[in-house]
Length: 260
Image 1: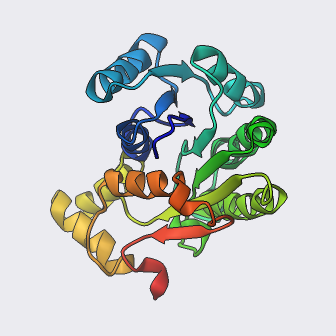
Image 2: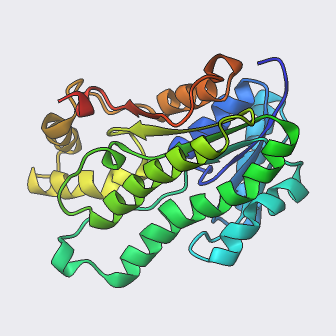
Image 3: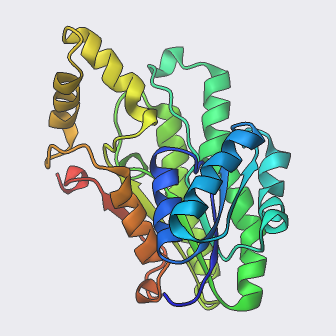
């Protein structure tokens, strides 16, 4: 990828989002990182990435529970650096709870951040990408966009919805030089699964390593908690010219989870 593109990555200050932003910058692209930290903290993350990679980076804060903030994010990124032609919707939250006890406010927040915000950024991105005849949209779904687990109704609804949304936009943009794909990670070493690991560790006498093994044994045949950088590598590939013929795909990176 010799051309320098500009990427907007949501939820980019930690975990998978930061790994994707890092890999894109290492591949020679400028990056707008999004998060919910105060401006000074987010800019420090962006500055560190710029120092490491030599690429232009900046940071834009937005609370994606707010539809107006989500709708404005693309324009905010363009103003902060330049108009992106790569969009990575990574921001997400999780809450596990039986359906009968699931709080309405948690349902609303998960749907807003994990699904509605992605719709809004895609809606903003497509016209600009279409006008220049090139664009890459990568949505970070989950194995839970393909299969189900108990106590995750809102997350399942959002991630299944993101997979369907991505397929629809992929078809709408198939002749425009734009690709739209999902990455569906399995268990990955990120803060979003920390509460589940901690709960298991408490049940296993405080042993975190045993908790991770117990968690992986249920679902993930390779028995490995994936490093976030592996998801970043896949995102870079999907944004490359080599992946120009791949659109509307939901690609599991899950250690064999969905092969079962």
